[in-house]
Length: 103
Image 1 (cartoon, rainbow, N blue to C red):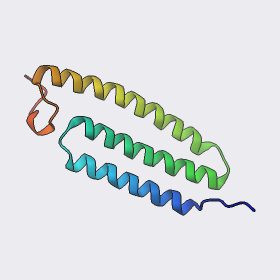
Image 2 (spheres, one colour; image 1 turned 135 degrees about the vertical axis):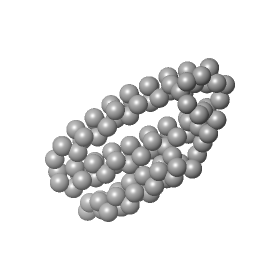
Image 3 (cartoon, rainbow, N blue to C red; image 1 turned 120 degrees about the horizontal axis):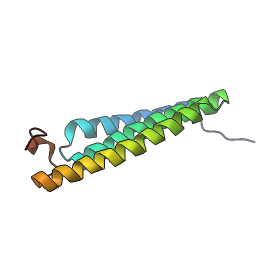
Image 4 (cartoon, helix red, strand yellow; image 1 turned 135 degrees about the horizontal axis):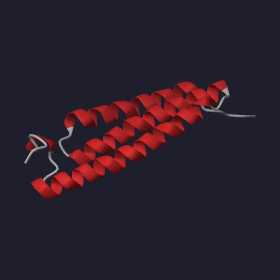
Protein backbone atom coordinates (compact mmCIF):
# COMPACT_ATOMS: atom_id res chain seq x y z
CA UNK A 1 0.00 0.00 0.00
CA UNK A 2 1.45 3.32 -1.09
CA UNK A 3 1.40 6.17 1.40
CA UNK A 4 2.03 9.43 -0.41
CA UNK A 5 2.11 12.91 1.02
CA UNK A 6 -0.75 15.06 -0.28
CA UNK A 7 0.13 18.04 -2.45
CA UNK A 8 -1.61 20.36 0.01
CA UNK A 9 1.01 19.52 2.65
CA UNK A 10 3.80 20.54 0.29
CA UNK A 11 2.00 23.78 -0.53
CA UNK A 12 1.45 24.59 3.15
CA UNK A 13 5.15 24.00 3.84
CA UNK A 14 6.10 26.18 0.86
CA UNK A 15 3.79 28.96 2.09
CA UNK A 16 5.31 28.81 5.58
CA UNK A 17 8.84 28.91 4.17
CA UNK A 18 7.96 31.81 1.87
CA UNK A 19 6.38 33.78 4.72
CA UNK A 20 9.43 33.17 6.91
CA UNK A 21 11.66 34.46 4.13
CA UNK A 22 9.44 37.46 3.50
CA UNK A 23 9.42 38.39 7.18
CA UNK A 24 13.19 38.02 7.29
CA UNK A 25 13.61 40.37 4.34
CA UNK A 26 11.26 42.93 5.89
CA UNK A 27 12.48 42.78 9.49
CA UNK A 28 16.19 41.99 9.40
CA UNK A 29 18.89 44.62 8.93
CA UNK A 30 21.90 42.43 8.18
CA UNK A 31 22.49 42.09 4.43
CA UNK A 32 23.68 38.49 4.70
CA UNK A 33 20.53 37.47 6.55
CA UNK A 34 18.42 39.24 3.92
CA UNK A 35 20.15 37.26 1.17
CA UNK A 36 19.55 34.01 3.06
CA UNK A 37 15.87 34.91 3.38
CA UNK A 38 15.66 35.57 -0.35
CA UNK A 39 17.16 32.12 -0.92
CA UNK A 40 14.50 30.68 1.41
CA UNK A 41 11.78 32.33 -0.66
CA UNK A 42 13.25 30.92 -3.88
CA UNK A 43 13.36 27.45 -2.34
CA UNK A 44 9.70 27.80 -1.37
CA UNK A 45 8.92 28.57 -5.01
CA UNK A 46 10.93 25.49 -6.02
CA UNK A 47 8.93 23.33 -3.64
CA UNK A 48 5.69 24.65 -5.14
CA UNK A 49 6.81 23.92 -8.71
CA UNK A 50 7.97 20.43 -7.77
CA UNK A 51 4.76 19.65 -5.85
CA UNK A 52 2.62 20.53 -8.86
CA UNK A 53 4.95 18.64 -11.21
CA UNK A 54 4.57 15.57 -8.98
CA UNK A 55 0.79 15.93 -8.98
CA UNK A 56 0.56 16.35 -12.74
CA UNK A 57 3.22 13.77 -13.53
CA UNK A 58 5.20 15.97 -15.91
CA UNK A 59 8.67 17.46 -15.91
CA UNK A 60 7.87 21.13 -16.55
CA UNK A 61 8.02 21.87 -12.82
CA UNK A 62 11.42 20.23 -12.60
CA UNK A 63 12.69 22.42 -15.43
CA UNK A 64 11.35 25.54 -13.72
CA UNK A 65 12.97 24.52 -10.44
CA UNK A 66 16.28 23.98 -12.24
CA UNK A 67 16.20 27.53 -13.64
CA UNK A 68 15.29 28.95 -10.22
CA UNK A 69 18.28 27.14 -8.71
CA UNK A 70 20.52 28.65 -11.39
CA UNK A 71 19.16 32.15 -10.72
CA UNK A 72 19.55 31.63 -6.96
CA UNK A 73 23.19 30.61 -7.41
CA UNK A 74 23.90 33.66 -9.54
CA UNK A 75 22.10 35.90 -7.05
CA UNK A 76 24.11 34.45 -4.18
CA UNK A 77 27.42 34.96 -5.98
CA UNK A 78 26.69 38.54 -7.07
CA UNK A 79 25.05 39.44 -3.76
CA UNK A 80 27.94 38.09 -1.72
CA UNK A 81 30.43 39.99 -3.88
CA UNK A 82 28.49 43.21 -3.30
CA UNK A 83 28.27 42.57 0.45
CA UNK A 84 32.02 41.93 0.66
CA UNK A 85 32.77 45.12 -1.31
CA UNK A 86 30.45 47.19 0.91
CA UNK A 87 31.95 45.66 4.07
CA UNK A 88 35.47 46.48 2.92
CA UNK A 89 34.60 50.10 2.14
CA UNK A 90 32.14 50.82 4.99
CA UNK A 91 33.07 48.30 7.66
CA UNK A 92 29.48 47.14 8.16
CA UNK A 93 26.79 45.08 6.45
CA UNK A 94 23.92 46.70 8.36
CA UNK A 95 21.39 47.91 5.79
CA UNK A 96 20.33 50.94 7.86
CA UNK A 97 23.90 52.24 8.11
CA UNK A 98 24.47 52.06 4.36
CA UNK A 99 22.77 55.18 3.04
CA UNK A 100 23.88 55.11 -0.58
CA UNK A 101 26.24 53.29 -2.89
CA UNK A 102 28.48 56.41 -3.10
CA UNK A 103 31.16 56.82 -0.49
